[in-house]
Image (cartoon, rainbow, N blue to C red):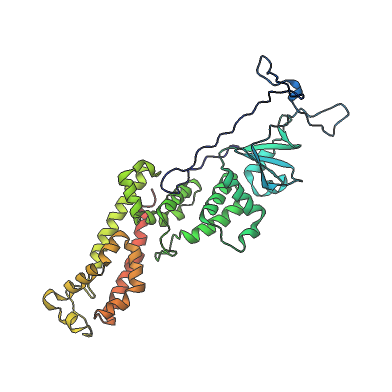
Length: 367
């Protein structure tokens, strides 16, 4: 059973990995070191074909051919007493058949084929996995074989992505659940406070691809928002669209969501406490705010939102800047003369907007 190819990584909004192709090597000398040509059909001489003895009757021998060794063996996962060799790309892994069969439905299915013509390596049957990256398989084995490695440290996001991709390809529910739990905590679907700060546009592209490849749409919402507020992403869209490996439907959805959030932000940020037609109900704001002066309370509020940079910052990052307003701006507003009641009024409006806007994103993130 072949394993499907995964999308390319996006470390900087563009491809950085070249395809690795196996190189076939051909024996050209005999046992004495003399040059020797293949026969007319291009096949190696019979003396070059190694045969593996079996435990059958005297004189019998296994007809399976010892495979040419791959370019390299994985030292970390080359068990001397292993009984099966799994080859990914040009790297061989000598592992335990029973353990892999227990956790991977795909490998269990592959191991069921023990035909006499299967190649061997060091006496073990060889199974080649296609469409799987070597690094992904290594990280998968790390999580499966030595889970204690992750007991004292949290794996990096690239590691989690590798584990999830390999787990999906090999149909291993144990490691898939582990990687998905960690990624869900980072790319939260239901927390509009955006925990963890900005997560980065290039990584968000990888997460969107991963969410579709592995059937985990709940990772997509936060990734979409990271692109909405990523200035470098929009600059790249304008200058080098082909380097962004997302379908046009995603780009259109992101653009529409960005425009709608900016419209909502403009209306919200310029709305003064208790509305533009209502004064301070407690009459405890500073005199200049209470009386309003020549521009009124609404004008003073809007001027402060512009002069303090809130309008521009929120236009670029509407939901993220709402969180900043809720956590850091109360003292600034109080120092400018706004009373506690007016500040609380705006904080409630900002909190409601944060929740509502986060919910609105659902309709765009389905693309």
